[in-house]
Length: 345
Image (cartoon, rainbow, N blue to C red; front, top):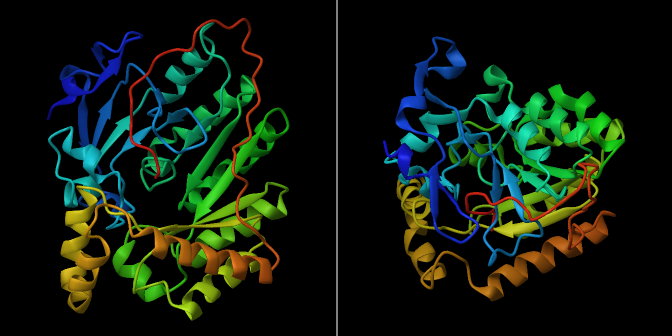
């Protein structure tokens, strides 16, 4: 595995030191049923704050990702390609070879305390889910949330994981001192589709229960309706059922995102489609003939339908920006540099 190829960027754009070296990797497996067939590569990272590429359309500049690879095993996950950078398989390897940055909480606390850090918004869950199954064992997020709370640093979390409720008290404490945003990903409510396309993720209804619970404790929670899967979850009745369920759960907003298929994910999804829905293979080839994204006309149609339904059920799309507030981290200078990584869209 090419651990040494993961390098930070220097302030002048030159390659910096590796994020971690091969000598820092410990590989483990566990006998527990929930971890059967999964290998964990424990690493001590040298950086945990990641700068989002300047060309990204995301409304934040920094992310934290304590894991690489994801046991949710979503066949469409765009982050699959990043596993190839480690010489790991982007198919089953992405689902079962999980990199764990075991020092993430202490490293984040140190970086947030740096005089160079300006207290900018930090997004989590934008690459792989920080509340995937591995978090139940490694418990990295409590330390991460505590570090953000103690520095009053604004942050947001996107997740499919119900484990976020374990950290409810920390979220409430953080929300008292800074801006906290939480979104849950629920692309559809069809359980038969969920079982094949998101086999390791909690069921859609369990994710909606997370929304209900957070709302009941005063933490507003939006829903990213992602992905809307062409020809499988985009029918008018399907869209209505999903938006209705999202509204009933008390979500503050619903924002649709049509399936996109980047290299790595595209091949794995195509294999799944050929096995489960071979009659759709040619339709997908035509719809995605121009690249990773569905045509603009299709995206606009889905967005319009979902927004119309959201208004009907009394909720709306997410605000165009993310909340930002400067934390009380002391004097500031130039922002720290960090490794570039892919973002959600």
